Image (cartoon, rainbow over all chains, first blue to last red; front, side):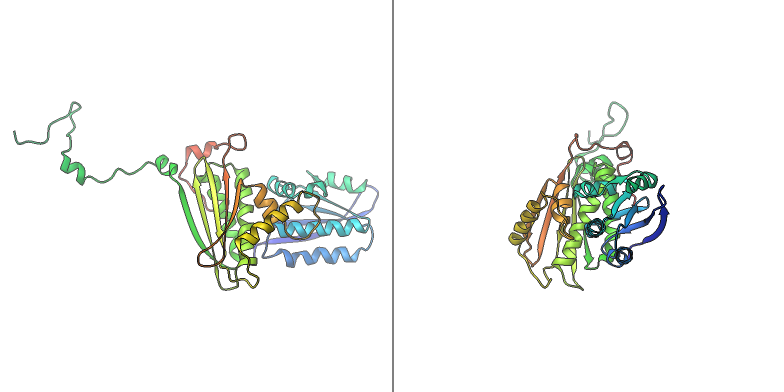
Length: 122
Length: 202
């Protein structure tokens, strides 16, 4: 199985509201994405309304089309519950693949976590 | 005189015809070698476990031997990964193999062929897959929120110039993709020009 780690951290925005910061480090591919996605679904299910998610992709080296499918689904679920989903710190190759499938039209990407925090707070 | 060897103007000995015929063929230089089409084939078990190695190989090959930039190397990494995943998931049963072939003409084009074993439960012909590909491409022209189906029409389709599907004589489908190197899209990097033979496998 390809190495990937997903860690979820609570951070506060300037208004004191909790944002879930999801750090993804390694490569998301066919061998690990189904298993790792469960962590994110558990989180989404635990907050029924207004969940704000920041995906910290600073350490993400690769993602395949299936992991993009999961990301789209997480975006759809949080949006339907009145929450926001954004991406922070993605490398050029990750932004490139998100762009070619059209996902950057749905999910905003920011260079830093701080900028992403500001965006979900608005 | 019965002496076939005469000194040449710079003092070296000229070869006779017989000696020239016996002489070894000149070894091509690395530049000459890289001008020729480079073809690499490999066979993989139908396990996604091996695909991270194929991604690393694709990245190194594209960066070091094809003339495409790092930017395109990452794109090809994704293209090959998607093609192999499809061949394993949709075209082959467990315990079989898939075939991958890279054909590079340095500075001109990179071609990748991926062949499944045709042993999957739901078999498709090349014609059916071509139709499915066209349908998916049409679907993706609008905003798409579906879970699957982006790999072939978007990642493979958008990042290559030619995509074709062929029925393999021994069963299965061969997906062939080709990308031409264009100056406006890419350029040879200085490191590749300085050391064209150095292939780094990470």
